[in-house]
Length: 328
Image (cartoon, rainbow, N blue to C red):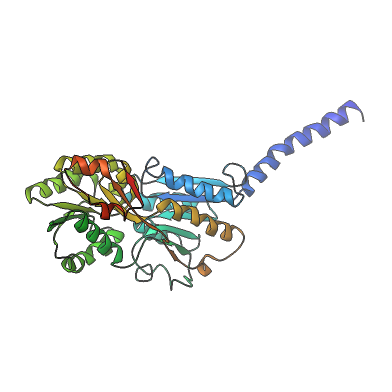
């Protein structure tokens, strides 16, 4: 081959390389992740999702791409971020929280949505036809659907601190997930002989007023809902509870690891890890509407004994034996 012909062939091949690279890149399936919390507070959940994908042979940046959006506890961002993710044409979007899935489902009825951590009945919300056969573009892994978890937490709070009668319930009555839980409070609290005071927190700016009300009304304990605002501002919430010198129960162990007294709830990272199996099924062609909704399989009680001592509480040995983990 003469030099001129060689250079011509070489130039043509070189020009084709970027096209081939772009084609390969375009062929890499993309997953969207819409979190109601911050990147920092979602770190364990995201790590669990990545691990679940790796266990199934998917490695981010190699044979799969992941686009993240974190709402930082500001629910108004969810719709905009969902729109951004849908525009990227992902194969599937993993969505945290009830508010997140409600927002995303209004943006798309075609892109598969896997919800994680929702706590209100998706059938009543109009998201799915049934648990066994969702039928549309939504499926996922739920926290809970009934009064059992609410009742269990209030019971644990009362058993850990015998004699309490006035409890503050802190949540956002406008958020779909919290709204369902807060509607149950009157009947469930009554079953345990507890008076309750609803402390409304819609944004982080309302935290101060809520804690001021707790102080003014001399509440003896606090029940903190699953709302993402609390999770994003976890350290601040735990510090404010500590300043009141009253016990509180939370939904996730992260609060206890940050200095809260105790938590009872599902292993949220486990739900993210399990969601990878649905991502895999969808990538392999299964229809999201035929993947049944699932509930959390594991609930854990975590107690911070150091915090109990700081509050002057004497937690009985019998109660400590109920714990899945005691932080000392």
